[in-house]
Image (tube, rainbow, N blue to C red):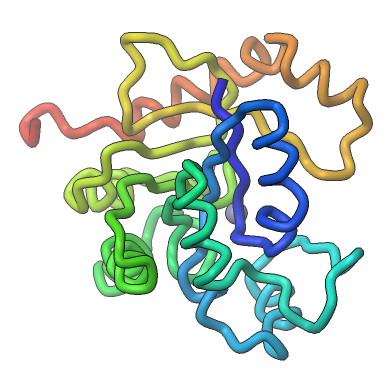
Length: 209
Ligand SMILES: [Zn+2]
């Protein structure tokens, strides 16, 4: 099982990573590049403006995003840092080429410069059906990521396309009963039709393979 955390929150290093380590899990942390580089005193507003939910519980000071030291420490302890666009933007149809370049290869370069390490993982933002598009899927493939995560609830098996690794979404405030239901397989069935539509939308065109 892979355990992934989206949005680059400081609590992922302070709270989640030690728990993962206690139980022997590797964490996969998906980071919007611009959030990390936003000055600490501006991060609350940045998060609100870019649809990131956060908690300040237990945090000293205004910083709510992971910083360079957190990210380097996570990697050194065996966790994975992935790219979650630059500005936490949903990559819906109709975005122009410059925006896609900023949000996909641009975000990767920004994170790699910060970390001094290769960033081979990308994660789509949002998860609603309209947050996927054929154009963005093409740019993600062309950027050369090794893996890309979506959120359409399905197990990862040997034949899974590494650019379409599905996840089941669990929010921090879900009661344990709902968490169990999400992980029971019921949501895999519930999302099947959407998953198939997104799969067709984001597959390479037959003549471009
Ligand atoms: Zn996100």
